[in-house]
Length: 195
Image 1: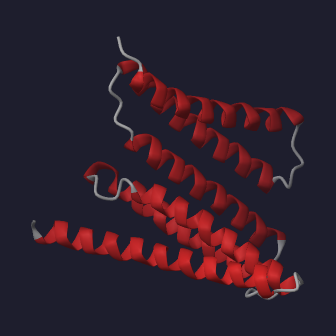
Image 2 (image 1 turned 120 degrees about the horizontal axis):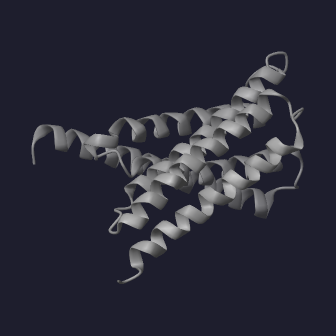
């Protein structure tokens, strides 16, 4: 094992252990809130935080799948950074770490778009990580990546327009999201179908 591989392995291992620790701490806090809490505002924040820790741990792991692939290393790294940023933004909203005067529409729009981009990057990382064994699966896979990108872009337009868009835009968001999901499933199925 060369030094570069060892550094990557050590970094990835540290990343995974950090995720594992975050999941464990979040779970313990969530259990405490369920067993000892009174279900007031504080307990709701704790449970929301626990859910965000779980969701963004999975999203981070999805983004990390391509980290050791030289060709897609930067896509993976971007997804992991976006995941950390999304996590911090959402936690700052839940725990009111950002003063209310700064939680403007622009801040909330930035947060929503960042979360959408993060989910799109994680989905794309998982899709690209699937080795396409058949030509049809390759076409469907990259079509799905395009549908994910289109869905994120359309969602971002809706957020920036504060929902004041024609109903066609909402329909296009639904169509692109369905194409992304269907294409993802079809990619896996096409790889399993025997000639």
